[in-house]
Amino acid sequence: MSQTPPPLVHYLTEDEYYQHFCNIYCNKGTVMTFDGIRVDFYPGNFKHAFRESANRQKGDKSVFSSRRAQRIDWIKWALEHTTAELFRGWNKNIGTYDPERRVCIVVRNYIVVIQFKDIDRAFFITAYPADSDILRKIRNGPRWR
Image (tube, rainbow, N blue to C red):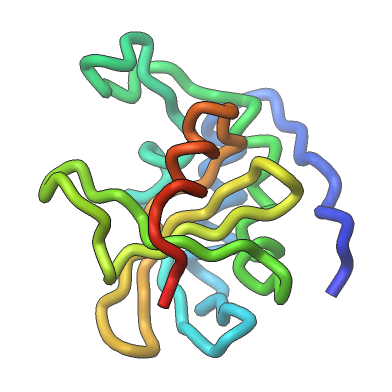
C-alpha cells in the first residue's frame, strides 16, 4: 500500500466527475477495506460526496466542489489504507456517535465515511478534505471498535 495518495483527477465538468465515479465505484463492483469490509457505492452518493453547502446551516449541497472531486480516486485508496485512523462517525440524525458509522482519516485530513449494513458490509456515505475544526471533533470522539 502506497503512503502517497493517487494523483488528483482533473475534468472540466461535474458530469465528467459523475461518470468517473459511476465507472470506478458503482459499475466495477465493490471496494474492500483493508480489514475485509465490503463497501458498496451508489450513483446517489455522488451529490453528497462532491457537493458542498453554500450555507452550512442549511446543508443544501448546492455547490459542486472541484476540491472534493479532484480527490475522487483517493476514496478507494483511503479505504484500503492499513494505517488509516479509524473513528466512530457522528450521526446528526440521531444526535450521537453511531457504532455503525466509520470515519477513516488518511494524509492528515482526508476522511471517508461509511455506514455499516452488516458486520462485513457497508455503503459509502461521503469523502472530503476536512478542516481542522472537523478533524478535532472526529479525533475527540470514540475510536472505531
